[in-house]
Length: 367
Ligand code: MG
Picture 1 (cartoon, protein in one colour):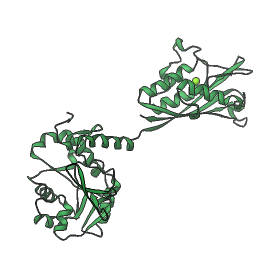
Picture 2 (picture 1 turned 60 degrees about the horizontal axis):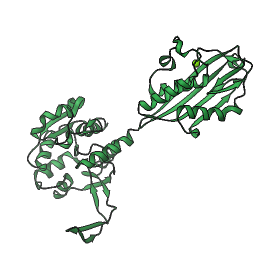
Picture 3 (picture 1 turned 90 degrees about the horizontal axis):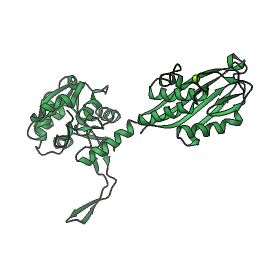
Picture 4 (picture 1 turned 180 degrees about the horizontal axis):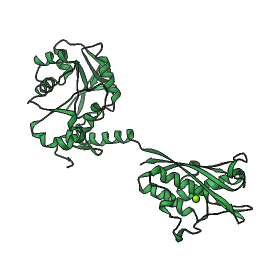
């Protein structure tokens, strides 16, 4: 089941995963965290299995009370075998490991520690749609979670807590506990309204950026002929290259780099050499296919780099034309395409002039 509108926000899906699972996962994957207690509303028990997924085994489930303070007390009562506890709002699913680490570290020197962001906007008081006054913002912070405490101290504080406290730092202060401020994280946002889901999804997309690099390698031997086709450009030569298609070793290596970045096999899988329809085929067909497959798979092909390895023909004079042709076929701007060449110092099969080798790299970025 995918939780949608009307479901409590912790159980709703954010970029493919329930908000609660993202929040629990941030702690379950952190070295400093042992037990995880999730406090739920009794009506939400049926939503839990989907919300937690494989993390269900990792958490202790506790039913909360009528007030926020009652729910926190119920959670604290279920905590065992620890000196310190972090209390987190499940509606902050973007909490980073580094923030958790800062809060835990601050508890070495303080009975309480919590992240906060200094207020940088001007603060106004307003009524009836008009500004009625300005407030000094110096020394003001926006509070975040997780808020960390020595377990005994926060249990004691909660025993005599005001029922209307906005958070656990307020409870701690009421009991006279020191609470250190640790550096918060602007991205550790609290999901409240529908617009927050959109913003959180955008932040997740930025951090989940999928950038891939593929490599390819190909060799073709020299045979009878008077020209070779390399990276789509035909160059007169004393021999030709032998192959089922036009034997464009540069394009073949490049196609394999793109298929490799997609983890979708190689050129032989998409264009079987035994298939007569590819006999003497111009290799631009293969490159157009690979580039199209990248786009269809949700990737931008952002860069291609080909190195041709041969003693002859000389590639340098044709490199710019080759880059332009590859760019045209694959649909990239030419400054994102590189063609270069090297000899192999007369060593090996390329050095003896028996054939041409090519290496290629392609970079794909998920859109
Ligand atoms: Mg080939």
